[in-house]
Length: 312
Length: 252
Image 1 (spheres, rainbow over the protein chains, first blue to last red):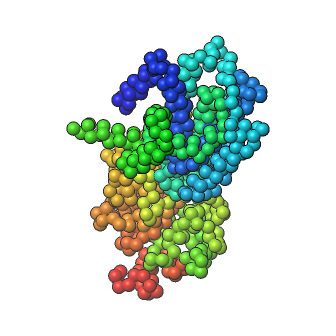
Image 2 (cartoon, chains in turn green, brown):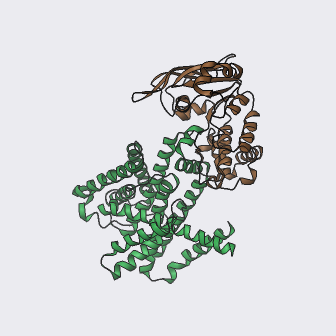
Image 3 (cartoon, rainbow over the protein chains, first blue to last red):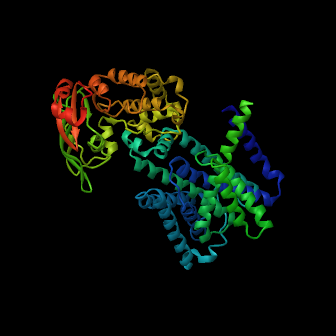
């Protein structure tokens, strides 16, 4: 416990100092890492804790992204109503899709999450007048916090993202350690026993699904602020697969694992795609290697190593 | 609950799977605090009966009445909330969680606490203290931080009962609590069941005749999904039909 607190303190110190010492380009990658880490943690609550795999988690990420973009372009640049709307849209979307998806289990659940997200993707792709179709919606300005700071300053924006990331992480860490979080783990481990104990298993799955959707929405909103642009690709299976890979690479059911997963994927993707044109092949190879050799992810590897050192 | 109300009533319950009748018009009633054993050869419908009572399976016909309330259409978790708990023939636990976490999930199951998502569960003293008390009482204190998957089969069998008891049930269904245990372990578990609160109605499915005769004051015999005999251990022992279909020469 004390050692993990120390590690967290070191990482936090690095995150605070980092933007001042690295080039703007690397800072941009760091912002992406933090945003996608929120996205990956949200999926981990659903996959790692509640035991519900998803191939359509980008649906809530993208839906919130489009909400943010459309509001900024047509209605308001005030951050607070935008935040409320993004959270609301993500929660409603997850509440609706969850009702449908939770009629099934296992592989069927996986397929229906994919199908539902593809419906949204298709909508965004075809409804050109509203969503910009393939080109998406460019020129989305950063919102106004109604505070004496401007998000147009890149360092300020970095800290805005960092704080949102820290709040999200704290809330999710509290969640997975709470009695409710324990119940989610119970649902993952043994739904039949949970029913026998008196838990409404369906309701816990549903709530876990919605919470995951809401935090995906937070990430999707930030992503649009960062890019100044939203398109159907933010809702696509590629995006859903990418976040799934982050969770698996980092370690499912660990919450901090997906943060490392996000870091690794963002920086690797950037590095590899500048060297090789077909970087998805390399990413696929990484995926296979993780599943074969480190099924518990990076966190699992670290844990088994530290256990070995502890004994020596 | 009025005086004399039956805690549990099973009324002409039939359950068929395809063309096969796993239960055929079974009627049973239980007294408060009763110890009842359900026996019968493999495939007699014993576990199916438990599954119908607890709501894992809906009956094809008939009713289940719990504390005077018809629960036939009530989902499993709602029946548990009325004071019904069970164990499973095959260990049904949370393998990757520690024993303490397993017990805590059971303790918080029927409290408002289960929806609390903003505070670590270990911060709730009432919860952790009750877990500690249960673990101590059941001799599992030394194993409290072990994961269930690291436990011996015999210890897991005990955790099965602890989880059911942690919800403070009024009716407890035990599905072969000593299945697969050694003679010594069987003696331990039997003793633990024997000293449970006498006000709890306990129904157990048991293959081990010694255990059934030792624990139960009344025995029901199922055969091919039908109730063929019911009575005191003495009556069951001397019932020629029961001897023929189930007991053989072993129990004289």
